[in-house]
Every structure is written in structure tokens, then in C-alpha cells.
Length: 262
Ligand code: SAM
Image (tube, rainbow, N blue to C red; front, side):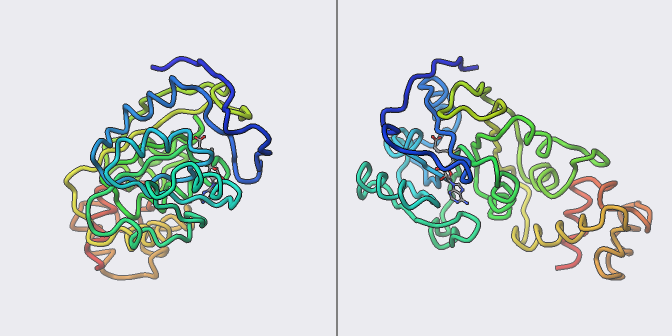
């Protein structure tokens, strides 16, 4: 695990971070190195989410064969264009709206980012629905529960289901709050997700299905899915109760039900 060796980020001189955009910039060289090492993106196609002042971008651009980044803050986009020029394909947009499939094309690609805390779950869900080959994501410590939750856990939901059936996930780096400028209120970790062989016919449709399946946690899956009778027959075929709730089903069972509906 990397240790905290924070030092001021020179690119930040005179820049006022926008708190509303979760701008806690990485300023620890050892953590930056640890993330780059864990990401294993040498010669790969990479999407960086929220490059900020370029703390990770610098190392990514020298390792990846193609680097795209989506940044919401126009001030940072100007700075990044000056710093990286044509070696970075930069999109000034909200990553939740950006056309990532068009940006990354049909070749395998990898996601890397120190995610803004205010939008961690929607960004993670967006990425999971696009099924990149790997994801190396810095998130606040509390957010990791969502990746590792099992059926019936309080935070079990779409994040745990997609990561559970499509990825092997583990925490690879711990980053105390002092590794950031300005420091956030809680500590962070890096979660690495590596895609497995499990095929999913349509990741975005799978995410829509899961959002609907978990929309009313107290309701049965059958009721949440508009009383579709195919849900009942698949539940029976899987040996599950007809009145099962989504929160009681494993990621594999939920994927099997989704695939039976498409
Ligand atoms: N990668 C940089 C680093 O590690 O120092 C910055 C990380 S900072 C935690 C999050 C970055 O995401 C900021 O640059 C912020 O402007 C950007 N950001 C916030 N919300 C975003 C969104 N919805 N879409 C794209 N970028 C966003």
C-alpha cells in the first residue's frame, strides 16, 4: 500500500477549486504512482474521468496508446489543452451525458479516474453499463460497500450486481485525506475491477432492468417488473420463490432473469 507523501500540486497555484464539482486534487506522488501501476494500461485504450489538473493524466498519456478524458469544468479543460495538446482527446462535458461509446469505439478500453464524491454512484453505474475491460477508480471509502455488498445487504443494488457478475473487484490502494488538495472530509481507496468472461447481451439495458428491479425495495421483483409473467417462469426455473424481491437474488440470478426477458 502506498503511504501519504503529499506535496503541493504546482498546477494548482492561483486556481480556486470548485467544491460542488468534488475537486479534491491528488497531490501525493506515491499514490499517483500506485494508481498508475495498478491500472495496468500500458499500450491500452483508456478513458479518464475527471482529469482535473492532470495529476493522473500525465502518467496515463505516457503509458496508454490512446487517452480520452471527460472533464466538466471548462477552466480545467483550458489548462489541460495547454498542458497535453493533441496527445489527449479531451471532451468538455458531464461524463453522465457524454457519448462514451462514440468516444471509445468498439475496441476494448479501460476506465481510470479519481471520481468526484458527489456523483460517485451515477458515474460508476454509467461505467458499469458500458462494460469496459477494467476500471481503476478512486472513491471515498464508504462507497466501496456498494461494490462488495451481497444479496440482502442494506446497500445491495445495481452496482454490486453488475460488478458481482461481470467483474472481479478488489481494493488496491488506500489514500488518506492528506493525499489531496484540498483534503476531503473522509479517506479514499482505489477499487480495481477486472472484466470476466461473462457475456451480457446489452449492458445499458441490464442497468435499466436493475434500476427497475430495485426501484421499490419492499415490492416483489414480479411487481417491480410490471407483472411480466416471464419473470415468474424464470424464477421458478431458477428454484426461487415467485414472490422473491430483487434484494434476495444473487447477481447471477438477476442476470439470468434479465437475459430471459431480452
Ligand atoms: N483527476 C484529478 C486528480 O486526481 O487530481 C481530479 C480529480 S477530482 C476528485 C474530480 C474531477 O472530476 C474534477 O476535475 C471535476 O471537475 C471533475 N468532474 C466533476 N464532476 C464531473 C462530471 N460529472 N463529469 C466529468 N467530470 C467531472
